[in-house]
Image (spheres, rainbow, N blue to C red):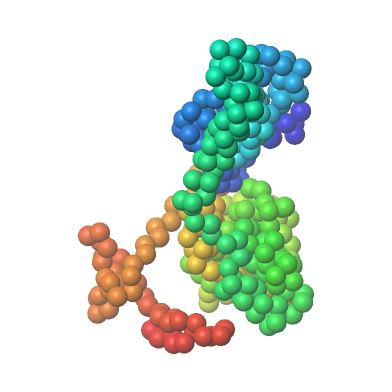
Length: 361
């Protein structure tokens, strides 16, 4: 019962703990609009209507079969809350359409006046063509209007090859969990996060270094968490008095230019803790443009506050290089009436082989 309760908490976004609700950042866990729901049921208004009527007719005329499909119906209705559950409606939509068309065909074949005008075989051909129009037509139309992004692009595959060739076999690769399986099998290296282990804790631990403005802190975080995992973070939390204090302590002791001894003394902690906070581990950080474009997902998790139970939303600005509104003398980027200060601008140029063609500030 406790397991079922946690599953329902997951489905209906109940914030059952201080950890971030990862489902709020998953597009597939968003609510399906009714028009999207009906589109999935058939693609066309007429098809959706036939599918819906066919499902009802099937349950009415074939109650035994309807009983077998009841689970699909119940889980499919959850799609009104979460888009991911729409796939449970796929068999219902197909059976509903087929049942509606076949029921109509049988009724018409039993109509003597019609069969005297149109032979039965010809009528069957008409219904086959109608079924193709209703079933296949919307799907073909959709596919012709959609551009499918490859799951792994050629540059990504080359980057994974570089990781494989230039890192020790014992290395741990750190990236957002979407890349977990790809990096595991293309780079042939162990990865910290992948779809099989992701959850509130793992999503938070994975996102923190990605959202950090301090690369030194991020490097220490990845090494420490890469070695000790969730247990290591909670061990620090118990020693300093909670998760938010653990974050503050780790950001301070792992900050660029920090004096670990002074930080430990400030927090009243023994110097014996120092050795465990700085483990040796070969790490590889994988970053690419699609990861940056997913910042709306991981940035909120990586800036999570356990006290406030919320994270920050990122501001991601994109400009054409030849129209970059920079004022180098004042050190500001002008955007939407605002002057956004910056320290440096790096132009990496194009890529040739594994190296940028130019690097300039």
